[in-house]
Image (cartoon, rainbow, N blue to C red; front, side, top):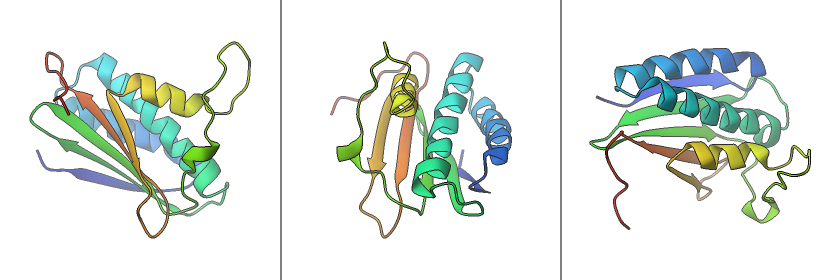
Amino acid sequence: MRAETLVITSESRELARVRAWLGEQLARRGLDSHAQSALQVAVGELTTNSIKHAYEGRAGEPIHISVESREDSVVIQVEDFGKPFDPSRYRHPDLDEMNESGVGLYIVKRLADELTYDLARERGTRWTLVKYQAGTRPRSA
């Protein structure tokens, strides 16, 4: 199945559209409802981060979300063209505290089998999530 892409703008009202579109894409690719829900939450977190951090709340900026099937997995990319993610500023959240900082990425890392980011671009960040099909294992590096 070929890759499909949804382009949204940087407004929180677009999150419901992302969730619906992504649910359809993942169902067509045979992911079970648990994996679909997990990935919808993960992509929602990354999209919210793009709105909040990359675009600093500015509306109308592009965010691209793509889904691609591979033999053993589904690959989702969330791409923005704003302020790039700064890994040196990321702090793992203290889950005993009620702080909000860093919780979104923590959730994404827990829900995806793999999470990487690409900063070697002219602008912005491209996040890549991988979810392996049930019964398959990640390839060894």
